[in-house]
Structure formats: structure tokens, C-alpha cells
Amino acid sequence: MRTCISPDQGFIYGIHKPSYSVRNLRSRTQIEKLGCNPDGSDVINTSNYPENRVKVEHADWIYEIANPFPFRGTTYIGKTWADRNAENPDRIKLQEKPAVSLHQMLRSQHIDPGLLEVLPRPLLLSLATTSTDRDDLIRLAETCCSFENDEKGIPTGLRYQQMPDGKCRPEISDFDLFEAVANNPVLPDSYKIAMVIRPGAQGISEIVGDFHQSQSTHVYEYLRRNSYIGGGHYAANMADDSIRYQIENLSVNDINGLRHLYYQRSYVRLAEFLNIEIGSLPFSDDALEDLRTIIWGHPEYKISDMAATLWGWNFGFDFASSGYRLHASHQQIHQQYSMIPSQIEAFAEGFSDSIGEITSFSSGDMIHEVIETYRLQYNRSYFHDYFQAIENNKRMDGRDDRSEDLVVWQNEQVLLFVPKAQTSQWELQIMTKPDENGEFAGNIVECETALRTSLDIAILKAQQALAARGATMVNTIEYSKRFSSLEKHHPLIYCFMPKLPHSPGAFSETQLRFINGHYPEDFAEACRHSLAQYEKNIR
Image (cartoon, rainbow, N blue to C red; front, side):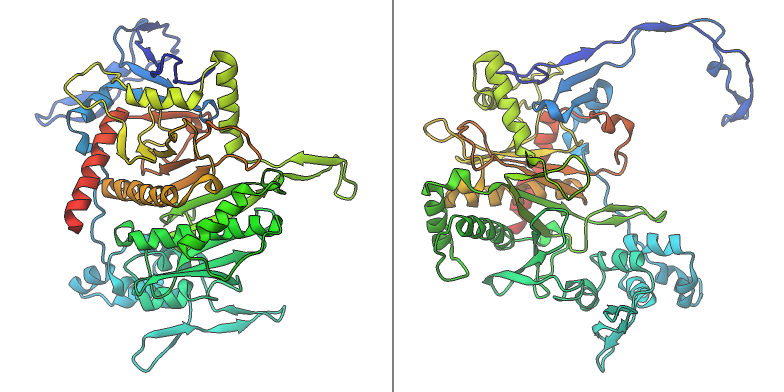
């Protein structure tokens, strides 16, 4: 079985210790001057043209760690690179982005700021995502769309135009630039609200739920009718009076609100499928728990038409000046969720005549396959061995003066940790812990109130730790167990996968080969430092 988890309840990995020679097949040599040394002597490319066979006797070692989940590939850690980071784990951090202001530069050179409006489009896109000057962003916003303003010149909305099909559309001259500007945290809130945040600004997606915890927390639940997810999906977005663009602005109440809407919608949909009478809406935490308990005990719960939940979060936004959208949608602190049907109609030709049904895909099914394969091969519980391997973890570099702990944060119910093999250089994961009977909660219907609260806190802490290291774009997904599953050793899992500037994904990642430059224990230590500093700052 291709996994780093051993039935001895530890991690197994390989080490490449390369020594080799290469036959020289070059047909011509072109010795050239590359430049000059400080003393004026020439730098020549002679070393690029060896005369004979090339011998590489002691190349850098490379650790090869199969992902705990075989379907997620293998991680490779360069020893020399990782050893440098092991000396100071706080080095595992992105540099803060510098202040950028075109307006200030133009003023300092006595140039008309109106020059901004005639810059080439790639420069406008770059400025929209990198500027830290509200004047830059206001001018960019007014360049790409038309506003209605009050008597003080503050935007109150967008101007609309009627299209040939009779529908009204906002007057946006450059939609990519519009999105790039609207996603910049420095843009004044009045512009953000008018452009993308006020309900209806992005179309007619209906608001079908909301959450109010205090004056500072307000979340809307939107229905996305024509979704890539059959049956539609839902988006929980921070409202126009609770604008959040950065993790440092996200409170515990906010994350509770975003997640409450996910729990509430999922439980209500299941209750409707099971013909369970639903009480007054919206649900309080206690009422939601009562509904969950009824669903969990319903005799037809495990044969529902719905197979599993689907939940995800794209945090952050970026847009390349070359026109490539790099991440996320309009509002960075939001969450999306839906439910996956058990079966869908199957066709062999066209779309008129069904030949039966096929099982609809759920990503949690792949976790289930790992559990079954491991049990067949070793007659053991995969996740009990996995948890024990985390507890028994030893460093790959053999050092005993550095931390061996993979755990970033935990309580009695959930574990936030760095996986031994990270698919993203900074991946974090959350798993539910086994209860007193050794059984795991594998989906949100199996999570009682305290466990749901623990999951919410862990999700917030994971994002805080990553943000403190400099991560600005993070994909988060949920691996949940099917409602029909009788498997008691399948935890609910969340994976946080940041995108880093120098690791956008290339052929290696497409082959599920993930390249890394630090030991997982050192990144865990850096994340613990970040959370400790965060807690210190908010006290």
C-alpha cells in the first residue's frame, strides 16, 4: 500500500543519496565570456563544457514521503534546503509586500495623476492587485465602471445599462480590472459595497439565510442556482456591514456564523428529504442540535437520497497582469457548500435514454477506500495507526535538539497538525479525534455541538497561523464520510493548502510529486509561534 503510515504506528519514508556519472554526448563546444569579476578579470563559461564523463559523487539528499492518503501522491524534501530552515523555523515565512503608490510617485515627479488612466492594461491590472494607496484604487475603480454618488461624491451604487436581451447590467468597461480592484483590501468600503458586496451587486442570487450574532457579525447565505454542483450550492458571505478581506479581521463570531449557515442548511435539507417536521427558523445552536439528533436517529437517515456534504473555502484573490486569474472569487472570507446525491442517471450515448444509475462522486470516498485497503492488508484500523504515528513522530534528519511535534493546536476533540507529507508546501490538516469508544465522527451529522465548535475554532486557528506566515491564498476542502457509511473509523478531515509565489504548480505537481524545502516538524513549530504571538496581540 502506497502510504507513509506503518502498521508499527510510525511513519516510513525513503532517502535518495545520489552518486552517479553521466556520459558526455555533447557534439560542440562554445566557450564565451559571461562578464567581469570585480578585479576586471573575465568570467568564462568553461565549466559548462566538461571534456569527459561528469561524475556526481555526493549530490544533495532527497527525502521521499508517500502521502498518508495514496491518492494525493508523494512529497519530496530537499535535505540541504530543509536543514537551513531547521536552524531557524521562523525563516519559513513570506516577506511582507511593500507599499505601492503610483499617485505619490507621480506627484513627487510633478506628473499629472491622470496618467494612470492611459497606462497599458497589464500595468493597470498589476496596480489593481498590488497598490496600497486608496487614491490609486479609487481612480482605477472609476476607470473600469460607472458610479452613482451622493452629494459628497461617495459611491451609492453602480450605473446600469439595458442589454439587447432586455436585462439590465452594470456599466463595467473592464470586468477583470473591476474584480481586481474590488478585491484589494485597501479600496474604501463604500466602493467595495457598491461594486460587489451589497446584495444584488453581483446578480440575482437569492438570499435564503442569514446569521446575526452581534452588531459586528452579519453573514448572508446566497443560493447559486446554476452551479457546477447538481442541485445548486450555497455561499455564506460576510455582509456589507461586516466587511472582511483579511484573516486578522475575522473573529470567532464570524467563523461561527459562516459555519452555522453550513450546518443549518445541511440539516434542514436532510430533514426535508426525511420528511422531518422543521420548527421555527432560523435555528439557535440548541435547536440545531435537536434537529441533528432527530436526523441521526431517523430510521431512513442512512438511505437518504443525499450521499454526503461538500464544503470548501477559497481564501484570497490575485490576478496576474498577463490576464491569468490566480485565485478565488469576489469576497475572500466566504464559504461554499452543498450536498452530493447518492446516485445520478447514467447514459452511454446522448442524453435521452438512461441506462440506469451510477454512484455520484464524493471526495470522502477516497478516504474510505484507504481505510478498507489498509484493513485488508494489515487487519488494522488505519486512523488509529495514523494518530499513533503522529504521537510517535520522529524527525527525518535525526536531530534531537529540534522539536519532533507535528501538532499545531488541539483540544480533546480535534487535532490541527502538519501532515508528514505536505501536498502544498504549507499544508495544514484538521481531523476529528476518536471518542471514548475509539469511534470517529466522520461527517457533520455525527458532530454534536461541542465538536462543531471545536472544528470552527480549529479552522480559524489554521487560517490565522497561515496568514501570520504570509499566506494570502488558501484552498480549504473537507473530506467527509457518506451518510450511509457504517464505517466507525473515518474521521472528518479538513485540508488547508496555501498557494505560494514560487510554487504555482507545474509538471511535478500535475504528476502528484510535491516539492518541499522544510521538515514538517519545523513548519509546525513556526505555526505554533504564530498562534502564540496572535494570542498575545489580542490580549
